[in-house]
Image (tube, rainbow, N blue to C red):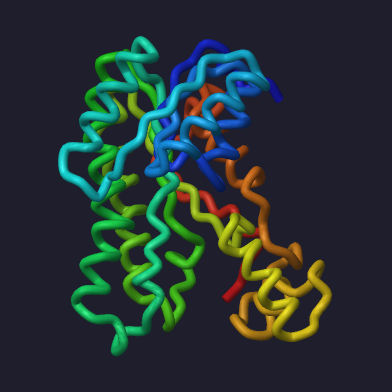
Length: 267
């Protein structure tokens, strides 16, 4: 389906790898102009150049870190200037590795680090994006939570709690700024085979002597207790396509939604 985004202008935090890059690829393929944000200058520049080459649409890179105060505003202002305005922003950052703890094991430092990575970075990006979108006549925001906000696990209490806060934040933006023409939706991915899980597939196969093609799926079921209706981990493009759709005008009457992209995971 043509998303109708040719000439539209989007800012993607975390757009240099994984789900963010997958969303950017879908948008670029349909002719959108993009700014990709990442921490690694070389990776960001390479990703932007490759999308420009493949799809003949303007894609720029900006390096920055949402953990730093003021960076969200700087990046958003630079992106809006470079693109001539913004019509959408997606944020796919916030892995929260220190949030993978149970209640008793998670220290104050783990909670603080997870808060800054998962929630505060997202809040900063949204706070910077909303005025830019309003100035351009409206647009869309897409945030990233996790399917586990509906099925919290005992071994990731800080992570799930703060991803749930991302969902609440997103709904609040939708309620607060719908009259300004700003839509806000939240995707909730399940286990998605980005670089981290791809590496884990290799490690599990080597450790247990399992076939590489099924090693990750066995671990998801047998070790992590995840029951996935489709029987496999997701691909970044399967989540990226949903993000691209939510940024586009094809989803013009959709706001305040939490959308699971988890293959039917039951935990």
